[in-house]
Length: 176
Image 1 (cartoon, rainbow, N blue to C red):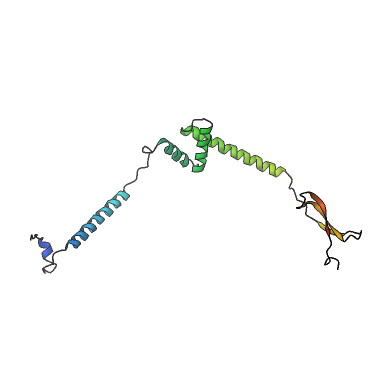
Image 2: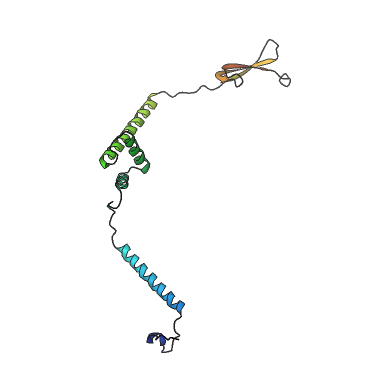
């Protein structure tokens, strides 16, 4: 059996009373607390230091290009579609300036299309669809049928043809 020499501070308590020696689990707990305090202190020190902006040296060129274009206000979907379009047209798709100019030309083209569409819509008079008007008439030939007339052509589901009038046989409930 081996005995360890305990420091004097652990034997004498606050009032000179003897303290019981620390158990193995208590020692482990104290070490964990000290390590946790040390790590949190290191983290606080790191948070106080100003962070250097990533200059992209650790990124591959494609990711750096995407990040630079995103900083200009282009979204990822727009960047991806522009790069893919440039690839398909066999243009230089991996240089910042060429992709930037392609994105700007696409944006200008889209704005011009929207302006042209707005002008066309403003110059065109509003179109109104005719309001359907239905008129029901009885045939005067005594055949027991009636006709529904409309000012809008209606498609007949059974034949597939369109017409403005349809004839229906009259039922016994209709005659009263």
